[in-house]
Image (cartoon, rainbow, N blue to C red; front, top):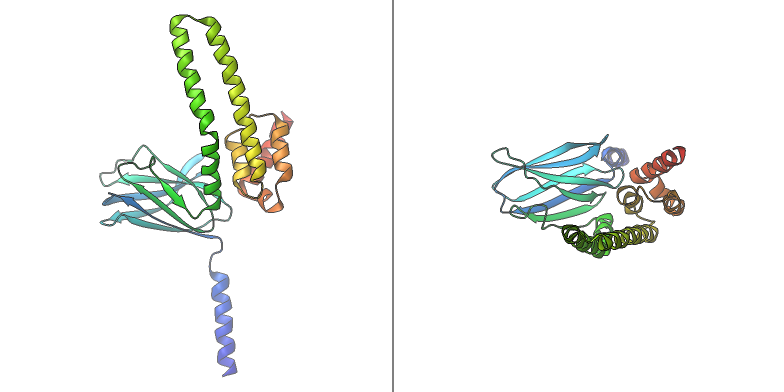
Amino acid sequence: MKYIILLLAIGFVLTSCSEPKDQMLLTGTVKGLKKGTLLLQKIEDTALVSVDSVVVDGKSEFSFNREIPSPEVYFLYLRLENGALLDDRIPFFAEAAEIQLETSLKKFGNDVKITGSVNQGKLEEYKDLVNRFTNRNLDIIEQSIKASQEGNDSLISDLQIQQNKLIASKYLATVNYALQQKDHEVAPYLMLSEVFDANIKYLDTVYSVLPPKVRESKYGKELADFIEDRKAQ
């Protein structure tokens, strides 16, 4: 009896060790989609590649199960039944968690709800934060076009100054947000994707406060390499 129990215990340990760690279970629905193929994509060596796919036939639900060693931005892409690819991709922060993604065929890429990913939540929070800068920048561009049509050079010059100040404010807001989120992988990601051309001291400041776990993440390592390259220039 003891021998059998020992074998069962060994078998359980071996099974547990063989199971992939850091698993992401991505489930969701594309309302209105009857037939098509959902492609799970990521960036590898600057190229966007498909790493998995799911065929949808009759039901709009889908699921992906993938090992995510380090939180990373993935993309969901849709190929319709006739082979046509939609123009929009859905970016999301993949991580080892149960993530739910809800969208529709009609508004694929525009009307999306994603839950379950901590970094995705932080990224959406950031987007809400900088949305006011984006809207103000659009206003300035509109005014600049009108001023150019009217030949109002003084107003064009003033608007350019306003735009420069706006960009600087957005950069500072991004850096401050990254500092606040230093315990999450979204922090180095924002520095690389949003303010990579900022003064090197800001990149250094954010990297210096990252805990070891985040420094060893995909974007933590990329930020370290990027800072080193910038300093070598």
